[in-house]
Amino acid sequence: MLTILGFAMIATFLVLIMTKKMSPIAALVLIPALFCVAVGQGARLGDYVLDGVGNLAPTAAMLMFAIVYFGVMIDVGLFDPIVRAILRFCRADPMRIVVGTAVLAAIVSLDGDGSTTFMITVSAMYPLYKRLKMSLVVMTGVAATANGVMNTLPWGGPTARAATALKLDASEIFIPMIPALAVGLLAVFLLAYVLGRRERKRLGTLTLDEALVREPEQETVMAGAGGTGEDRLRKGSGGTGSADLTRDGDDDAEEFQGLDPNRSTLRPRLYWFNAGLTVALLTAMIMELLPIPVLFLLGAALALTVNFPRMPDQRARIAAHADNVLNVSGMVFAAAVFTGVLTGTGMVEHMADWVVGAVPDAMGPHMAVVTGLLSLPLTYFMSNDGFYFGVVPVLAEAGAAHGVSPLEIARASLAGQALHMSSPLVPAVYVLVGMAKVEFGDHTRFTVKWAVLTSLVVLGAGILFGTI
Image (tube, rainbow, N blue to C red; front, side, top):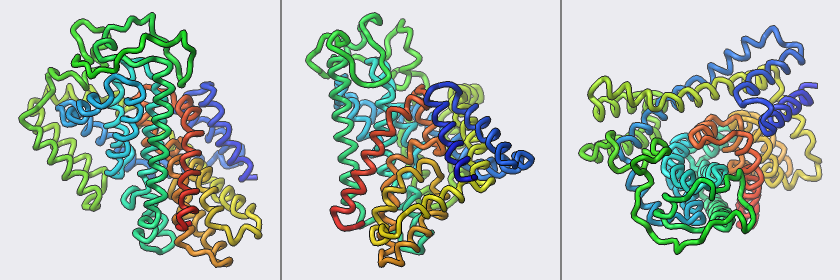
């Protein structure tokens, strides 16, 4: 019964947010509360919620201070060179912009933190998408999928969890998977190219100067790519254009402050201090010198103090990023209700046991491939901790009975990460959709199919290269 109710709860949540019948925060809170009562454990709802909040509180703290830290770094101009480089590459061409989004997300993902990746990627690319009226779900989908592939880095989380759960060396899991993951990343770049071509077909290619003078009535805002010839604008030469995306008197000027070269928050004299502080922060995070929430707390305090020594300026910077902090932290604590009930009632455990038990004995010799396929839905509907510490050891034990190496099981378990990064149980995805001003349901509908395809490419490449 718990198995059925667990799947029913997840399905109800997804249907309600994808059809926009409820907001994600409301659905994350009310749906699990209802199902907790339905399984006869309503009296323990408070305990489950507090357990969930306790488990996710460090994540919420990390996200809060990370948003403040990187928000300040964006304000002071640390990432402006990256933005200018992407602008030179993109040239207001939708195809180049989407490919640039994938490349930027992949590069920034090297730090191993999805929230950081999404904050930097959206801050750099959002003004271009908004100005050219490109589909914002294309941006969030490509960024999430690219980050999902890169999330398999040993310091990203899943590889370390798999190594710990199966008592293996992380390098033995990751290094042989590099060719397959590289193919997966190439698949993301190809996807970005295809989606970019569709956006170019819909919107046309303009110079930045043309983009600035587009009349609102000429533009068609669409949630996805597509459209007919009547939707297209005049195709330009795709020239480089020298105009900034912020102009005096522009009603949207506030939206594009991230690219305004004359904004008052710039601190060019402190550029190398800020760059060094960011490198030191990321290095300390990778080396695990201190808990990540503590690192971002210290980094945010130091960045504010050095860049904005006057108290009114500090308050202004904190207020400027308060919306993002509140939205993301609120979503994380709402997700704590969902995960708390899912775990506390035993639904996750019963669901995992049912899935493992449903695997036919004849598939035993192919348990690595089965693990790869199961990693797609299970890492989407479960946390990485639940999957790697609860399900993977059981799959490894079943595979060992048929001569399948635990290393193969561990490598195959990484295949679903491209999809995992769009899971409603991943706090970082709320940073992505929140900063991009995209409905979570719209992001889910658009991204899941492409993320599943990318995950299957990674799994197929792993089989082809003999690592799975």
